[in-house]
Image (cartoon, rainbow, N blue to C red):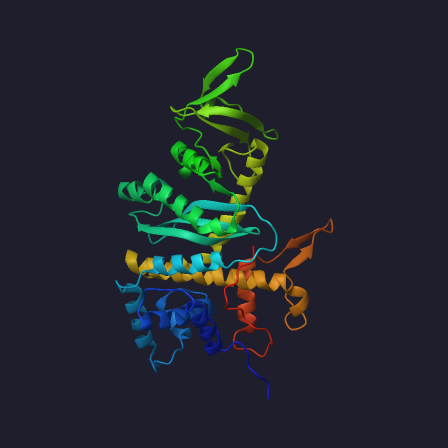
Amino acid sequence: MNKLYNKETDIVKGLSDFFSKIDFHFTKPQIKIIPHIISSIVNAENITTLDISKCFIDDSFLTNQSSIEKKLWRFFNNPKFNGIAFFNSSIKYIINNYKALKHNKLVVVMDHMFMKNNFVTLMFTLKVGKQSIPIWFRCDKTKSNRHHEIDELTKKWLFSEKVIFNAIDEVINLLSPIKSKITFLGDRWFCNLKMMKHIHNKGHYFCIRAKINSNIKIFIYDKKEKHYIYKRFLDFKTQKHHALYHKNIMVGSFHFKCNLSIARSKLSDDPWFILSNIEPNQALREYSHRFGAIEMFFKSQKTNGFNLEKTKIRNLHAYENLYSLVCFAGLWLTIIGIDYTKNYNHVKKNLNIKFVKNNKNGKPIRILSIFNLGLTIFRMCYNSYINYKIKTNMQLYL
């Protein structure tokens, strides 16, 4: 008789064993239900309580789908459960116990995710390969899901210096066990000179895109005139196939010294004005990595993964609780994908998934993101006869 591998009970036990290592300040019923919900989210590839309930299996003897759905609603809306605290404790444990494959520089992407249901998330992700994993987030609810229509209350909080500075400090502290410099990448929403100076003073790096119509004062040293001259971003002429670099410029009223890289990119209609404290040519390369990393991550949460925008949740607290489990589920699948690529030569006889192919020049290119590789492994191996264990120890390799 063939043996079934990776049954629901096996998956839940594995996740429960991992969570038992973390000092959560939650009730036993809350801790007990979390592995079931995470497994069900991945299995359903959806986050509506209806779809989660269809895949939900536990020992509470609830067989009526409507009863399970109500149980899920109660959990997400429970004021005594803090999803952010759950995720923070989990990611801290994972980072503290990471294993290094090689010495990597750390790249953190800062961005905002806007949802059709008017939720907006301030997100910090850690670049892993060509994609990224969530390491810090905060959510808010606004009156509109359009960037230019964000209401003032949301701007004052989620886009405020206080929140972003605090996030940067928490991320630096979180990643400190890796003992490596961090490069923070941010789009035009993060064009804040005080923030750049804050990162610089902490001993880390930044590559931030400036707004072309920004009022930021730029002072560039004129070698002919032998003094600094004042310019605005609009004063610079950009060329299609030629980048401009300016080192040791001074910006802002407090004359903060940094570098400026100017270029046009296929990824954007507007020219790039990148302020950084690294070599200007390197800054352009670093910033270009932002797009693939953060877009893959957002796609994994939306259309290419868990269909987050289908949620019917409208309460901010409930949404944060759901989102924390979605982030953990995505992180879990990414770790499964990383583990498979690391051990491919040893496991391919039992499970052979093609995740790279050679291009016309014979260079290997990835055809599956690490997240999608993890999701493919889960689809194929969950409750199957394939002798390959789905990893639940959350061992992160960098």
